[in-house]
Amino acid sequence: MSLLLRFTYAVCLFSCVLFVTQAMDKTVGKVRVNWLAPEKYTDVRPGSWGSKKRYTEYVTKRLTLHIEKLATQYLPPNHNLIITVTNLDLAGDIQFIGSQQMRVIRSIDIPRIHFSYELTDQNNEIINTAEVKLKDMGFDMRSHFLKDDPFKFEYTMLKNWFKTAFSG
Image (cartoon, rainbow, N blue to C red; front, side, top):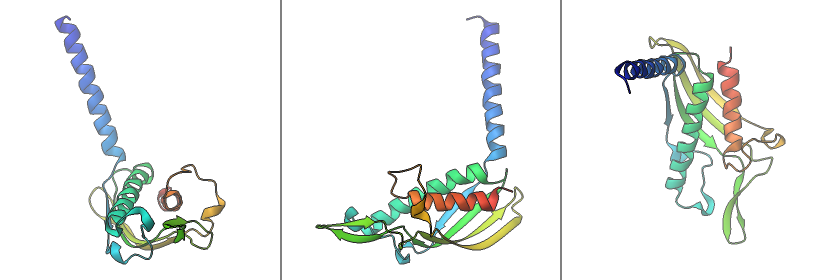
């Protein structure tokens, strides 16, 4: 490969990396999710899944990843979000099915999540703070795009909140 061709390739590669980095900086703020005393939450029971501690870690990790994904889609550019979850009640309830304890989804066992949040701009000036108590009383009436995901109802509830709170 000639020297000119290598140089041109290097400049193009550098420009692409710079462009992508700048685009990311303009669209993605920082998101932090704190889970305050999850052992006291209303319902994060594992059923026959295993230990409550491991299941709680699994649930909070999955929901944190989903919140981070939603933040990249709905937060204003260069804004930061801190969410502190104070209570979680997963959709359904744990019941015995034969010898196994399983989460059974019934319309009376609605998903709920309580949290506070703080939205700041790029200068760390507070734009908004609030206490939020989400519940989805019609969670079982919608078709869900994540049919086999165990947290599809909670994901939908959080997505609806992000759309409402951050889509000006």
